[in-house]
Image (cartoon, rainbow, N blue to C red; front, side, top):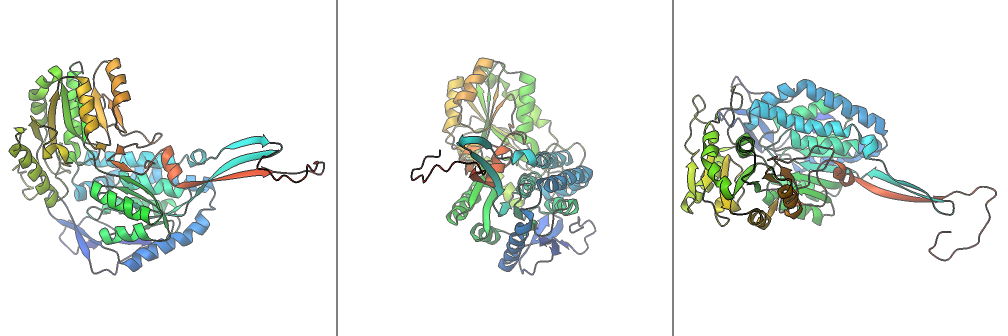
Length: 508
């Protein structure tokens, strides 16, 4: 194992890099502690790779592409089949590491892995996903067909909140399409990602086809500007995502950048009360709110504003504890810095006039007094001008706004610059149809609070939540990781009649 939990306060493990099939100890002088957010225990040290190490990883990928691109589709599919079997076999073990370094509950960590596994399973169908098109006899004896071919070395930059799912959104489909890959996991919790990378190597991914480097902005910029990298996939904050999109695009790369969000749940009075309240609490406070698709805003329409006391009561019942403790509903946030930012935003809401219905500040957890805990927090009387509304909180905080009509709710949501996801809770088919047609958000849930599509479809966040045209999985990602070559052909037999020189553009 190249990573392990440091439970005995002995020498802290160094997280390795993977370059050209070898597990490499970085020669950098800059290291970052990987910290358990519930205990502050140092689990490992992750390197900030040198420029030479990034170059070596890209060179290995470039070299491997010359042969990997010609590997039969069936061989690539069988590696994906082996990888999905290994992930299933080791998911519980990986979930323990993920929970320790990221903070989420064991059950949520297993869900993190499973949602990535679904994409690996979809990659096993690359034989049909990567098919081109064919048209016979488009002109006399002329056939036209398209080929979907790999583009070369691709790279992925992943966030801390889903250290299993997001990497699995990226490298399996990229290499299944015949590309090679350089992955930069989050420097805050790279250990579970590396366990998945180990499984990929065990599954038969050849040397150089998948490479891993670690680091911060310097490594990100090196990836975005490297002349041999053809495409960059990013998931994370809006600020970094915009920087990646601009820098990589400036250097001629394909870029998909999935960024911040402010996801609304619109509640009509006719909605199923119990199911809706359960959905709001689960989507608002699960994973301590550290999901780009978390429901962070509830828009109560008309008489549904009377549901606030029940919403508060249900949120109060959630158990805050370390992610590995049985029965935990809300674990710690990733870092002390993240916790302070959340507390500051809550305070800003109070100062600007919001009512603090449920205060999760100052919470302590027995046995984990040093943990980065914020309890479920509920604010009502919020307006669209308040900082608590305009900024992405990324914590277990739910803000409530009230409107009188569905039209007002649609107008409110559409005025927000983000466009990742939205949910409508109702039992009216007419209202649902109106909502899905008029709402300007990329992913819509009807009685579903977190409408992340299964991999047969594509992740389709929009507007301020996404830069680039193509999403990170599904049919769109095959387009992202391939280029189309069109072939127009005519074959002559011995009996063909020579029809002379054609100086026009017409085929005949």
